[in-house]
Amino acid sequence: MQTLIKERNTVIKSIHGKLRVALVFPNLYRAGIANLGMQILYDLLNSREDIYAERFYLDVERSVETRSPLRDFDVIAFSWQFELDAVNILEILSRSGIAIRREEREQVVIAGGPCCVNPSPLEHFVDAFFIGEAEAGILEVIEAVRGRKKEEALEELAKLGYMYVPGVNRGARRVYARDLDAYFPTAQVLSEAGAFGESLLVEVSRGCGRGCRFCMGGYIFRPRRERSLARLEEFITQGIEESKPEKISLLGASVTDYSRIDELAELLKQLGLEIAAPSLRADTLTRSFVEALVKSGQRSITLAPEACERLRYAVNKEISNSQIHAAAKLAADTGIKNLKLYYIIGFPGEGEEHITALAEEAKALKRETGLSIKLSVNPLVPKPHTPMQWFPFPEPSALKRRLRILHKALAGVAGVESESIKSAALQAAIARGDSRLGYVLEKVLSYGSSYSAWKRAFRDAGLSMESYLEKISVDAELPWEKIDVLVNKRYLLAEYLKFLEGETSPACSPGCRRCGVC
Image (cartoon, rainbow, N blue to C red):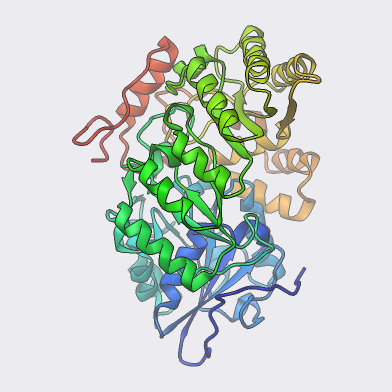
């Protein structure tokens, strides 16, 4: 549905004489406008006078800028952030009158984003996959396409080492921005309809070296990089001047891991704007940072214990219960009123005693701090390029039992919300899917997106959904091995075995050579 969108900093150009690029976020506008990757692409491409990048979303069928149909664009570039958006990509092409099969259309369709580290499920539909970070190559991609017919353009794209072009080359190697200080989009498109409101997105760091064994982002965005404090101050000052936001949203795998977090906090206190931050690490939370949040009007924080203490260490998240309690007490003492806790259930070896321990910890936090507590509890989704890629999706009946235990144990103490187990199972199937899954996606496009429609689509494609959720042999050839994210398989296997033994691994450090990225 096309609705009237009120934005600031929308780029308006004449379309004449320009290469037209459609940037498509295959989910709702409110999520897409709050996505930094889309802001980066929009800013980088439109910094060139000879390129006009316009935006589309699942609920915005014509371009935001000129209300042009998707078929009018020379290049169509999708940002694939969430597994289930694979179907939305096909839906957007189909409703725009564009053939979904890559060999049946003239337009060049590119996909980028984290889910592209396993491109196999979309190989039948996407012409080329960008593997890595936009700043490091998107302008080269556009030059490879400009002025060329599709077949020639794909040959040129295949010469770029970070582009996987099905049917032309055999794989790709991730590229990343080595210096975050070099660039930052300060004139961001803002809308009150965004998930974060009119918020300037400020990325303090990228990547994470902590090595939580379930977290795909912790592996595919290595190495960890920071922006310098001086450049952050410059970017924030310029961003406030150019974008005039109501809020600053700090982004990073762990914002409080930033090496100069207290100095950043002092800078933020002077802004007079609301400050928001995603999930924070309990062991690096500082009083100065929480005070900055509270001074800005923030009354809620989020921590991610992930599991009870025993399993937390097994997945290599070395945060003790005492550190979580200290962080919660600090938050309460500083003026925070609400605490959200993220947990994952279904880790291999998990028993009901682990769930009971998790509930007891939440009760203890409530008693000690008086904070209003809410738990977000979601099933483990094994992801490619992680040490847990070989593990099965948890048994649904066991997940349901664990959720019942939590709801009963925490009734009247803490709220418990959870993602649909069926939705999580579908995510797992796509995350570790092979090219045959494309036939399933094609049928879901016709049948609808209900769970029963998915089951029917698997049957009619001659496939078993359960086979995509089972444990994978460590000796098996994996559909995503054609993509080199720079982390070597030997390292992932060693981390897999350490999980089984309950052993931890140290975080990345300068000069470390363990995983193969540096």
